[in-house]
Length: 147
Image 1 (tube, helix red, strand yellow):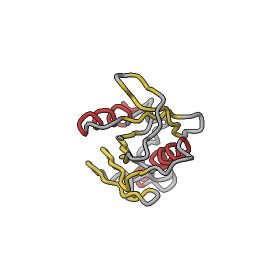
Image 2: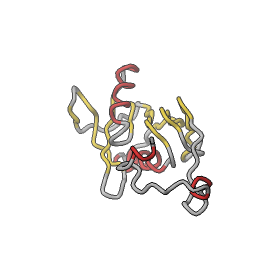
Image 3: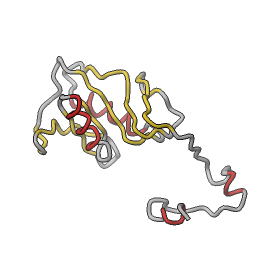
Image 4: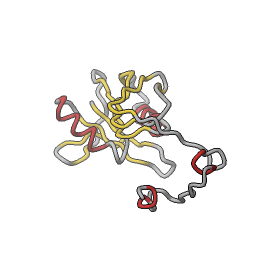
């Protein structure tokens, strides 16, 4: 079974499940950013099935910056299967890796693409110190970052 975090890695996990000819597990983001098991995607609909005792789980992320969501994904899978031992593979396949984290709870991060991108608090940022303005709400002001 291939499982990606909600919502951004859901489609990627589904595509990989098709290529690998295996099942596709689906999660949902909760109010505290937790990942909550929903079931298996079958013909475009989520059905309530648990992971089988004989199945192995491959986790996939489209982007990893801090590994916060990757850890929540693992916790969500385990929480939904408390009466089972789930065989979660000790790797996380990441499409775009921009983190300094290469292991999450014992699982090795396998990056397809890695980018060395640093994050600093504003007071430590060398660009801010050099006069570059701070951009608030980057998602809403992407055009300012791309100028």
